Length: 54
Image (cartoon, rainbow, N blue to C red):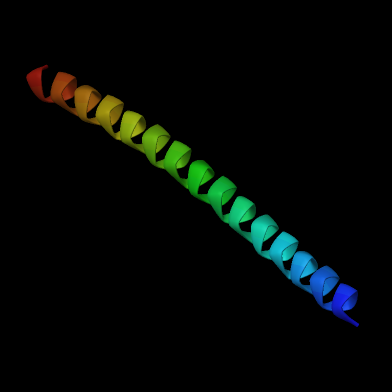
C-alpha cells in the first residue's frame, strides 16, 4: 500500500511540474508579445513625430 502512495505522490508532483512548466512557457510568450508590442509602439511614435514635423 505504501508503494501506491509513493506513486500517487510522484504522479501529483509530475502534474504540478507540468503545470509550472506550462505557466512558465505562457509567461515567456506573454513577455515576448509585450516586447514586440513595445517595439511597434516605438515605431508608431517615431512615424507620428515624422508626420508632425512635415
